[in-house]
Length: 125
Image (cartoon, rainbow, N blue to C red):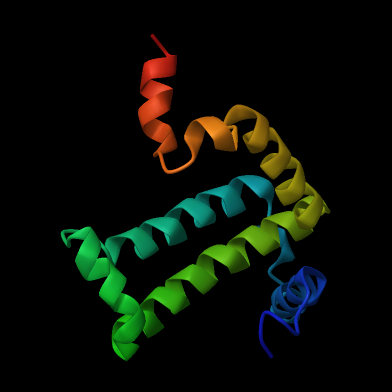
């Protein structure tokens, strides 16, 4: 299976099934899942701690580093999908709605090629 063959719903079902088979639903409440998302994201970030940006680009050609990144990234996504399942939310709808908000907040003609956080600092003055 790959991204081109798998829907978000397929992933939600796979995660839901995994959780159900272990009777973990009782642990998958929004608060605990939000904590887990942060913890898993921190584990992903830790892989890049103390290295230069250019070195991080090399991870995609280093099989062992790429494997570790994919594992931690998968943990983040699994926790996010668990949150979506717990809240009975539609992830596609949420992502598309957020992109629309971001298009208004960061118009392409003003932000193209610019790091948005630099503008946030200036906007707050």
